[in-house]
Image (tube, rainbow, N blue to C red; front, side, top):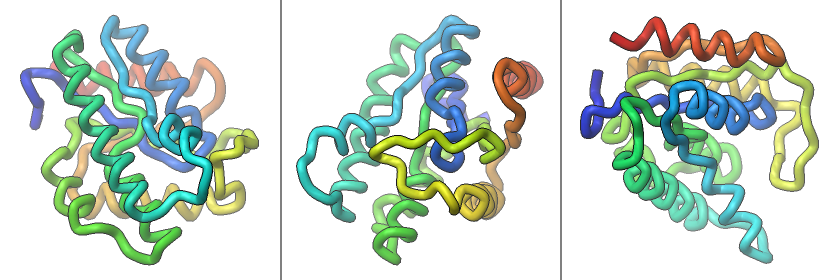
Length: 176
C-alpha cells in the first residue's frame, strides 16, 4: 500500500449523483475516522460566473490541501469524496484538455483503494450537476483511467444500505 503518513487513503470516484458524498461520510463514521468533502461544491457555490479551466485547477489543489490537513486527525483511514481523475476528465469533457499539473499529480497522489460508484442510482437534480444522460459514459471513462494507472479499485453498485455494505466489505477485504 502507498500509504501517506501510515494512513490508508481511500477515494470515492464516479459519475454525478452516485452517492459518493453520502458514502464517504458514512464510511468515515463507520470506521471512526475523517473524510474530505468535495471542495468543488463549496467553490462553485461561491462564484457568480461560469467556471474556467483555471477554476478546476484551483479546486483540485484545494481538495488535496484539505486532504493533507485532515490526515493528522485520521484514524488509520481517510475517505476522500472525489480526486484528481475526476478533475482530469471534467477538464477534458468541458474544455477538451487537461492541465499538466492534474495529469502529473494523479500518480503522485494515487490512492490505496478507489471505490468506483456505479450510475445505477436514480439521478437527483442539483444546480451543480451537468450530466444526467452521460453517467454511464463517465463511469466507463473513470474505470478506463483507473485501469490506465493500474489502480486498486472496486466497483460499488446497489441501492440504500446495500451500497454502503458493499463499500464496507471492500474496505474490510483491503485492510490488513
